[in-house]
Length: 213
Image: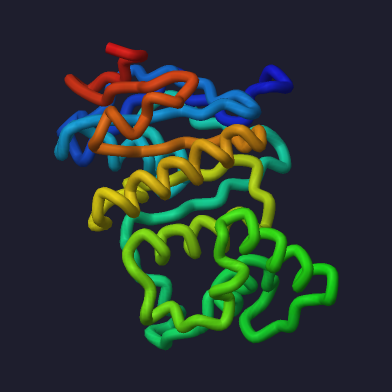
């Protein structure tokens, strides 16, 4: 695999029983790329995402993650409550660094959490309960929790779903800022206008994945 390629889908097809959803997909994700994935409900977009994340295995073909590459995943729910209990913004983001449940983080890791909160303009709110956050703020906290562990690829699954327009604009601006920091991002969205800063946008339709089509 090319050193710049972090993730590669080669001749990938996927079927649920005998119902083929995706056919002969080829897709490479390179270091530092900002990739958009868009498609209608039922197009196979969610299936493609599960293949990328390794949740599903392809019926045919291969999905190859470069050695040592780690992915961070942000789902589309706006809940940040851990185990059903509210926590502070700081506590939730710090969970991204914990190797085991209830383990303590180091002094250096605490500094890293604060630096990450600063990137998201959340440092002043760090002691605020996540149960009081707006949808947009909650999504920022979830992305910060993933970013603090410095994954090689950040996968965002419909991060703007269920939030108001003003919060959506702020969140898109923050995601674009992460791209400017040279982060590798896969941004799944139902709204193509959210993806105008992407290096490439792939449309999922008719069992295929089409570049800017």
